[in-house]
Structures are given as C-alpha cells and as structure tokens.
Image (cartoon, rainbow, N blue to C red; front, side, top):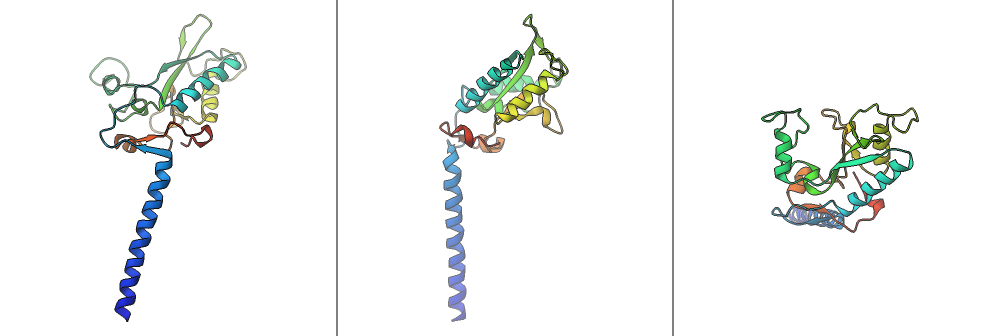
Length: 192
C-alpha cells in the first residue's frame, strides 16, 4: 500500500510538472513567435518600435526639440565593424556588443542625436536648444521611457546615451535562439 501511494505521488508530481511546463510554454508563445535557432534576422524595425520611434520624434518636436534618429536596424557585419572601433580600428569604443549581441540586430533598438537650428548634429548632453533650462538629451530620454523604451543612459556599466531599445522581455540569448516578439502585440503590452 505504501509503495502504491509513493508511485502515485511520483506520477502526480510528474503530471503537474508537465502541466506547468505546458502552461508556461503557451503563455510565452502568446507574446513571442519561435522562429527556431536558424531564424532570419529582421530587415526593418519591429512595427511597435517603429511606431514608438515616430511618436518620440513627434513628441520631442512638440516641445521644441529637433530629434534625429541616427541608427535603427543593423546587420551583424555593421555591428562587428562598430565593435572593432576603438579596438582594431580608429575611434572611441562605442559598443561592447558584437554581431548578434545587440538589440539593433533584431530591429528592437534605435539611436538618436539632437539637431540645432542649422541642422548640425548635437552630441552634447547639456544642450538646451528649446531654452527651457533642461537638457534636451534627458528630456528625450524621459519621453522615450514613457513610451516604453529602455534608455542606455540608465545602464550602470556602460552608459550608451544615444541608445533606446524595447526588449519585449526577451534577452539577447532568446533572440539568438529564434524567439521574436509578435508583431500584433498591443501598445499597452510593450514590456521591458
């Protein structure tokens, strides 16, 4: 009798484990498409990122800030070339991500700069082109965060002030393994 009870308990635990695993799998697949490990790399921004990028530019314009999007999607080769900058080629180190290790490679990140009245790009974090006493750079970052972007300026180890990304809860490893955020997610479901 005791052995039968132990066997039933073991089977019950196994069944519960698989029910839990199945439930978690289905919950994940409601938000993500599993394209498999050989998934192709996107060739354009994710539609939600594109929509929020456009809102960001418009909202910045509404408060007198001329915002320029300097980077969107990036190929692995372009990412590797940026990674080499400051290492094997001239210039400052601008990234710690090699090809396949950046949200830019998956259409989930953008970079920005400011523009002055003459159309010159501004990289000065203290620039106050709209004259309200606040840094335009940080005003843009605040707008972006309100729209669901994660800002590279908030990172602890390597502040990447021009960088904005939407992870949709996916890690780089998830993306490398073929998971992609669904394109029909509602704006309210954007989740970093």
